[in-house]
Amino acid sequence: MPVGKTGVDLKDFEKIDWDSLTFANNYIFLEVMNNKNRCQYLIEKVLHIPIKRILHIVAERHTNSPRISSKSIRLDVYVEILDGTVIDLEMQVTGKGSTIYRDAEEEQVENELPLRTRYYQSLISMDMLRRGMNYPELRKSFVVFICTFDPYGKGLPVYHFTYCCKEDNALQMGDLTENIFLNAKAADNTEDKELAAFLRYVNSGLAQNEFTQEIDEETKRVRNDTKWRERIVTWEMDLRIMEKRAHEKGKKEMALEVAEALRKKGMSEAEIAEVTGLPEKKETMK
Image 1 (cartoon, rainbow, N blue to C red):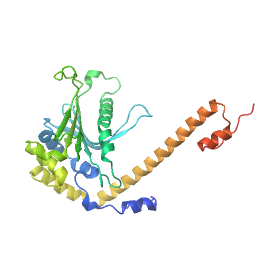
Image 2: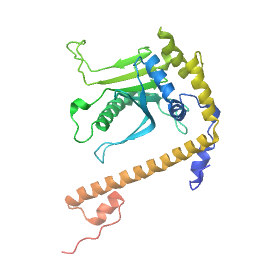
Image 3: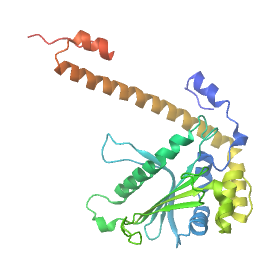
Image 4: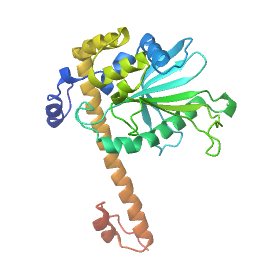
């Protein structure tokens, strides 16, 4: 168990029911899918994207915007294949137990999902196109969300989006990006046996074929691994601390901006300190 954290943090994490965590849990998903053979099967058989060879997989890849003030992201499973295509696999769970220590509200997640996808694609593209490269060097990229809920409420097992012309839907924009949302609730709505088996496993934990049996066995191994548990607890606790610091930093930066605006309007330093909560800045002598 990590040391140097507050007692409140430790108390929260002692309540974790590790045995209840499934493949749909984000951290278990990362660990189980950090494997070339499993990723290749999932992409080829379920998403129907042919793969010659996976070059590398990165679990929890951090991608930053060139702008310091822009939001950075953590991509769940980042896969690059031989032809340069990038595939980002994301597990998205809502409701009780959706993360290690807090719940995600379904309505909020559904509303944010399309916008998150847009942002993920933009940062993946910026990551591909390094300084000095030209636009034709951008490669194909897929963002794939595996959802434990129906993200668009139409009962489809797969929602597959590309840019097309409103006036002629057969005309594709050709930007080389595709966004796919798998709906684990709709396993019975597809004739694709491989897809149905995978969705059913994500939704219920029922392993019906060789692939889902393999990830089920690996899921059980991972969640019983003491070192993995300690690593995840440390990770989550550090994340809490970073989020708290970022929130406090953001509040201070906002207060400084407000103070500067009030200063320009001629408000005294004492009044500014009272409004913003910042220490009173000494008046400069005239």
